Length: 188
Image (cartoon, rainbow, N blue to C red; front, side):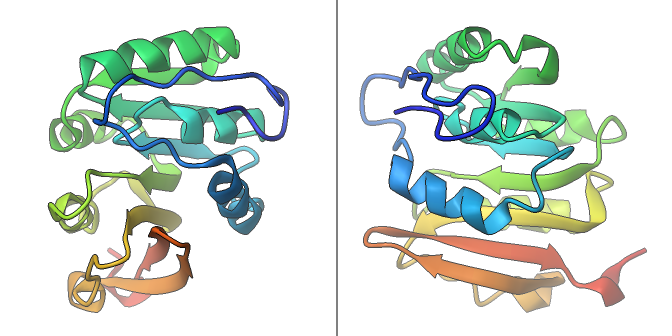
């Protein structure tokens, strides 16, 4: 697994051992960043369920201003710390070693994110819980893009009811990226 583009291009990243994380393949990562390339330069990026930290590090490499990583698996936390140091993004990154919901509450009032990426464990509806929280959160800007990496059988039929609209759905062989934004008429 490597950084694909930008200032840390070609640097190899470490991944946690075991089956607790599913690193996004380089091909899918490249497709993802091609779709959001206009949102990344200068962005405040939030990487939830970070795993190795590769998505947030890719964002930093491509010009994101700052990235907050959230992970509560000890092996993954150590991996993220090493990858941030190795890519020399120490001053542009924060790792919160916590469960996602506690981290979101901790971040309130400190940041407003341009892009929020989450790759939660599949088929547990963690993404729904996060989206329910974020809809009334100060962490969102008016045009924040939220991207969920999910299994192909994950349902998102609740988006409109929660106050989001689907921007884009990109399906791969084994998973998908769902791009959503808060619906403007539900803005404060």
